[in-house]
Image (tube, rainbow, N blue to C red; front, side, top):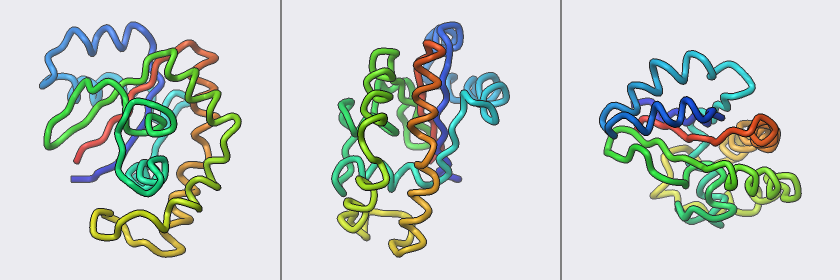
Length: 163
């Protein structure tokens, strides 16, 4: 599959619609209802395949999906869908605010540069070289702005990826 990660800042109505569905139906709903409306707007943030490397860097070079800062910036959160093919995690509004505050003061590019060499090559799907580091830095560059916008609009954030 593609392994393309996307963050969406969703409103209460979209979250309620997701919660009304069974876990098996949620990813399809996201693809049909949320993605077409939000993907190429300020409410969608594409991470391409960089999400995995960014997540490793947020965990100091180790995979960590604890729902605490900074490891909940991308992957972690409340799991709404978790199976071998798809993941959707939710960051509640208070967590979105905490993430936005963190990203306002933390230099994510420094964190990525410092922790990128620590990512175990045997666990990481992408090449680890200068181009790989630049790839992560480029895709992470707008995360702070995305989360600030989510806070301003009083939205929660979901992370989605098909594996």
